[in-house]
Length: 329
Image 1 (cartoon, one colour):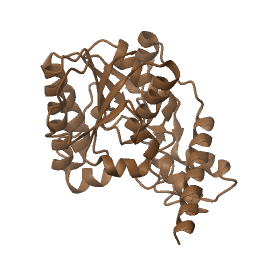
Image 2 (spheres, one colour):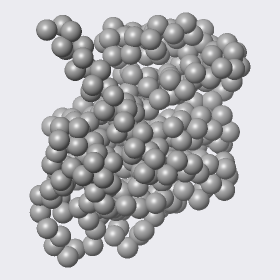
Image 3 (cartoon, one colour):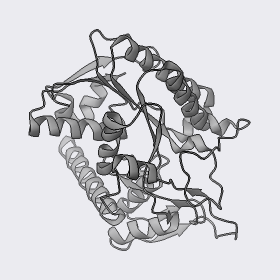
Image 4 (cartoon, one colour):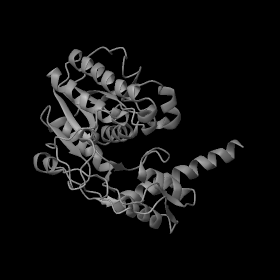
């Protein structure tokens, strides 16, 4: 990637923050000479959260909304399109806005790729494109033909990602597709719809850790440090229009996840909202053999280590904020 010019959307989100931290670190260590343009509606807001990163010399900021931003001049051999309104609340309250943001944003980035002579563009899609995973299907592969229910407004996010993939395929541009599942790592929101983040937030507030359901639902978690490698490898080496599941294939129940966070936090109590009803547990676990066999990707960081690192980072961040509040008061 030495000397390359990149355009990044979603650079202020979870995926984007990890990518920018990794790319700027690599730029320093390897003297790559990167130039990275980051799209943001409010560069000032990001600068307040991450002042050192926002001022990194290799980063340029391009103000705009992903749906209709003015196209920047010049060429961009590489584009990472990671902008997504990944909000459960938005998906339920304003499903059309969710859908339109994903679709219109992807269309606009494809227009940039066409104008900028892009050689490779990464589209961060989602395992939500498969719809509800059948309980008898332990791992969902890229060839699975399932889809979100078209009659449910809750399907806006998954349907939007499906439409984004269609737009990429119809464009004939060199778009690489990464279907993300569940992740854990620093910078993860502690008050959104991510179970691992919620559990860590509960633990930092002295508990109890609250499991919203009965705790039997099965998920799997890839560490965000590994995620960065997966995304960059797909961007650089994957064939266009061939989707890859991105995640861990090691299933864990939500109840067990809560217990692990509780142990890391020193024995915080765990509370379930309801008891198991005997029905098969809901699953959201990918088959990652395609990524393993074709790109040499794997899970290099075990879940306990990933949770420990995420918890310690959040703990340190909360302590730093508390000190700053005390100083201001």
